[in-house]
Image (cartoon, rainbow, N blue to C red; front, side):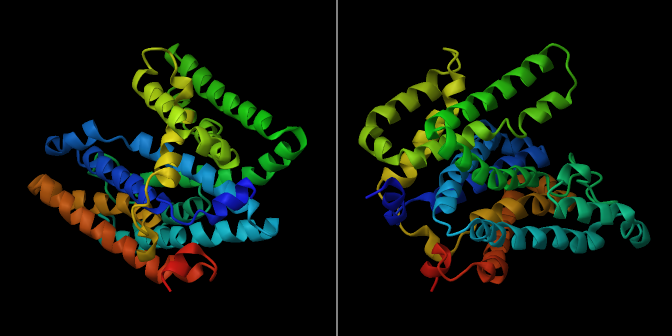
Length: 349
C-alpha cells in the first residue's frame, strides 16, 4: 500500500478535534488581548495564539497536500478548496457590514461611504490589511479592526496556490530536496527580517515576518510528514521524544530553527497515532466558523461594555455566541457548499 493510500484509509484521526482546539485557543487569547482585562490575563499566560496558528499551518500542510494528491484534476483541487473556505468567508464579511450598520457611531450616510465599499472589496479579495476598519465601528476599543484574525486566510489561500507548483518542483527536482530548500528559505526570510528589525529597520519588518514565505516552514513541515508518513509511523517514538526536547530546550540551545519540525511531529502524532478520541467531525467542522467569527463578536461585546462589567461573564457570553454562530455557519452555509463525498457531509448523513 502506498503512503497516500495509507493516509486515505486512515479515517479514525483526531484532526477535527485538534483544529477545533486550536481555533478556540485563538478565541480565548484574543478575548484577553482585545478586552485588556487583567482578570483574563491567565489566558494569555497559559495559552499561545501564535502556536495555535502555527499548528493550523502544520495541519494545512499535511491535509492540503493530501487533498491535492487525491484530486483528479487541478480544477477539482481548486474547486474543493474554494467550496470549503470561501462561502463562510464571504458570509462573515457581509454580515459584519450589515451588523455594523446598527453598531456604528457614525451617521448612516457616513457609514455607507466609500470606506465601507473599500472594506468589502479588500476583504473579499483577502486583502484585509488594506481596509481592516469600518466607519465609526469599535472606535473606542483597544483595536479598531473589525476582524483582525482574517490575516491568516490570505496566507492559507497562498498555500493553496503554491501546492501545485511545489508538487511540480518535487516531481522534477526531488521531493525531500524541494521541501528542505523551501523550509530553509522560509527560516532565512524570518531570521533576516528579524535581524534587520533589531538593527533599526522599519517597524513593518516584524509584520512582514509573519507573511509568506515566513510561514512556509510550518506548512512544509506538515507536508513532509504527509509524504513520509510511513517512516514517521515506524520511528514515531524516537521522533516524538526528540520533538519534546527541542520545544523545551530549543531556545536555550539555539535550536529554534527546528521548532516547525518538532511541532509538526507532535501534532501529526496526536492526530494520527494517538488513540482515536471519537468522531468529532460527526457534529460538523466548527473550527473554521469559530476562527472567522470570534473576533467581531468579541469586539461587539467589548463595545457594549460587557467585559468591563464582568470579564468572566463576558468571556462566557462570547464563548456561547461564538459556538452558536459557528454551529449555524456550518449547518446553514459551509455544509451546503461541500460535495457529497466530503468527509463532513458523509459523517453528518
